[in-house]
Image (tube, rainbow, N blue to C red; front, side):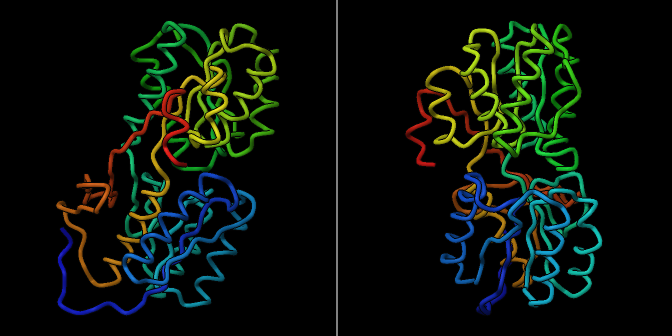
Length: 311
């Protein structure tokens, strides 16, 4: 556990900066942020840009620095673009944490609720099962600069080449998975350009939704398998019809809760140790060298459970 000094914490201000506000994924994450705020008696809240734009995210963080918040937690659209502004925050004594950025050292700690490599492999395994282990597929990411999406894509392709050599990407990864409309139109284009394509992985919560809509329009559920990350309630109609085969994700609420909890601990001067545990998530795998805290809570969403998960 984190060591506990014998004094009560003041009411810290902890700001969580989402990649984009107003979409189901981050709406659900905000529930966890608010739950932690109540449980820990801190002023924690979620904010962010209205579009997944790195420059807009920088502006949000600049405003938070000017407010003298105690902690800034960010889900980066582009980790490299954020480096200068997050260094400015740290130099000012603000605690800086990241989420979905395990390979970028731009915060004091990065916190993940899944093991990225296992998650990427699970998506390939699901796709391979539906594709019979051979044929062409495409990968969608939120953008070519979103750290975690591209880490997943790298791991997925590496694993596919090793385990399923008869599968192949029909094209390079496409940055459309934060938009239903872009994922929809891209899927229609790919189906026309690559008529033998058999699968799509959406690493970005709107990617499978748009792809599923395209599969439904073309009545292609027996030709193309769609898997990836999607909110259960949003994916449910497509899962029920078979236009999306399976969604693999974690509960964003857990992530929001964990992020605020770790920030609060650090603000109280409590060191992260290998024995870190958080209520509801269990014991973490703590990489002390790379400053990454990982929980492993992959959730499989199918037509059988999509409507019963509550989000």
